[in-house]
Structures are given as structure tokens and as C-alpha cells.
Length: 175
Image 1 (cartoon, helix red, strand yellow):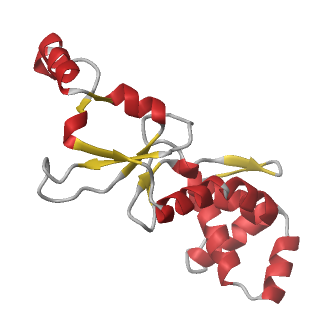
Image 2 (cartoon, helix red, strand yellow; image 1 turned 90 degrees about the horizontal axis):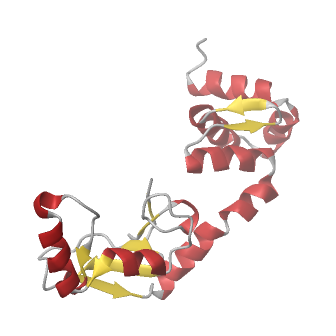
């Protein structure tokens, strides 16, 4: 699961490496080099370990291609066809903002729990009730649309009632 940041950089959830199931923070940006590709693809954020593992020199690439004929074996890429660099100031700021999401969610309390569920696309127990991503999305949408007085009333409700009200309003009042 990847997220495209406003600068166009693709990163994992919470500013992590885009390699499968890697929890390390992303700190290297990889794009196709202009010589290898006519059009620019979106830059992708990796951790140092995955850049060293996945992007190999031409000699190692050719050796692995001969060893794993037919495309079988681990995926590796020719380093010469990619531009590998540190993130720009804007990209680094966006990655830092993504990494700080857990603190922002914790500061928001129950609504932050809903935002976390939506962002990570996962079901989590909130105060004893399992809340899925769709229901959490309805709760976040409702919370963001309410004025200050109604927010206080809505926040005073138990989780089950909040979810029921949010789903009904998002679905247009139908049961």
C-alpha cells in the first residue's frame, strides 16, 4: 500500500519505505534516469537497505539475469537506469510530516483513532468496539463537517452511537 504525497513522491504509510512490508523510514528517492526513460515516472521512496538490495550494478544485474533465466528469482534493477538521490527539501518535509502522523492522531483522541484506521486501511478496536475503515471514514467525514457545538455533542456519544450516526448520515439517512 503506497501513498502519493503532494510533491508526487510515492511512499509507504507513515513515510516508510515502499518495498513490501518494510517498516524502515524512507530516506532515499529513486526515479528512472532521463537517459533510460523518455517520460518521468513518479519518484519512489526507499530505505537504504532496500536500495542496496534491489538496485545493483550492471555486472551483477547481468549475472542474475543469466542465473534466473525466464525472469524467475529475486527482482533486481539496473542501478545505471535509475537516479538515486536524497529527498529534496519539500520531499523531506512531507516524509517528516507523514512520520509525525501517530503523534497527531494521539493528540486528537477518538477522532485520531478513526483517522488512523482510515489512513492505514485497517480495522481496529476503539474503546471496545471493532471499527472498520469505511465506518471510520464516515466518522471522520462527519466530524470534519460539524460545527464546534455539534462536535462536542457528537464526541460525548459512545463509539457505537457515533458510528451509527455517522453511517446513517453518510448513507443519506437510510437504514
